[in-house]
Image 1: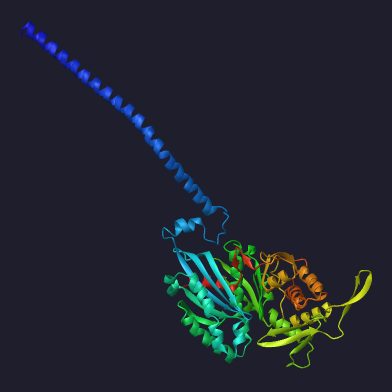
Image 2: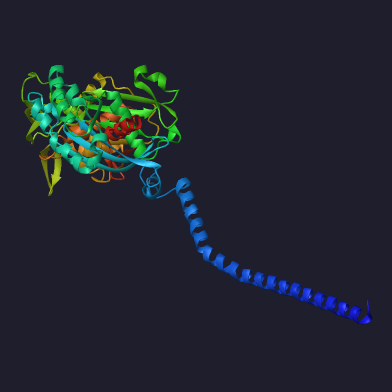
Length: 481
């Protein structure tokens, strides 16, 4: 090869090398430029995603707090998460139930809306309808069809409350209590037969044995459940549950979680072992038929009455200055104080005068004798919060011991003090208040064995929900469908 050709080849190789270097350099510059672009783009994406990440974090944090921490909404109630998350994503469903409490003094319908867990069927309470009519079904002993017709208004209230497309799947039941227990069997059966037809045609789904007389034990258990459910005492330590003391018209119930040490003091039939949220709870429950407020009134007003058929009832528990009519068990009685009864000297404008008073001591002694005759057992399990409801609440409110809407705290001694005050007062509007609150103090002290300084809590509602056995029964029905 000539020198000139060799030089040209070297020049071409050198030029090719420079071109290759330029290409490589250009690629490097392009890569660096791309990296700079990506460095510019990546912060932009991050800045756009950051708010979403923050929202998701806050959402998760709040949800965790709501599941594990305390909130302003009680755990038994439907909360925001149930409405907007659990229900929408199919973790819960809406469930309804209708329960009619046919008591001795009136009939009450309770219709409930729950959210029910799909996983374990546990229920959270959304709302409640409560309506009441008087008198009770037992007042229609001689006209059962009329008594059944009186329920139509209550059933219409329930139909207005529950969506129409849910009627056919909504369980309904009617349970009578002490009022029908005290009637002759034939008359009670006639009332139940008439009522059964009304319930069957209500549009709702009657449960098995939908109409009947509730056993006093079930009444006590379901009332206990209601109180503890509404107070959020269920699911934790049994020692934190409250005692439930119910005073109806014809009977009274005591129900409390019992300990192994105290169960020997009770009759074995009074201990009921119930399974509750994967927990076995031994309950002491007893119903005293004939010790409801209306029944006690009749027994005490008739004390020492020579003529059992007389419609005039004179009692040491009634102020001698008072004469009033009183309706009970389909009969109307005239109640009054004892002639030549007790008087009390009082100072008035510098003068001493005698005022007629009911004889509290004699009234109290008669009541204690009745309690002893019924064999009321003193309970050793009342060393916990005691909740009173029904007539315990109503008469305490009438005596001015508690707020008539909210209820409140009091002691057993307050019942005794209010009884003595009522016996000293001429009160034609509440002629039996002396008897009523004296009986309540005696039943709690001489009957159940509570000390006079024992703190008590008298309630009608908790967070707007009525305290009665109806909620406990509705929960039981829906969870076991």
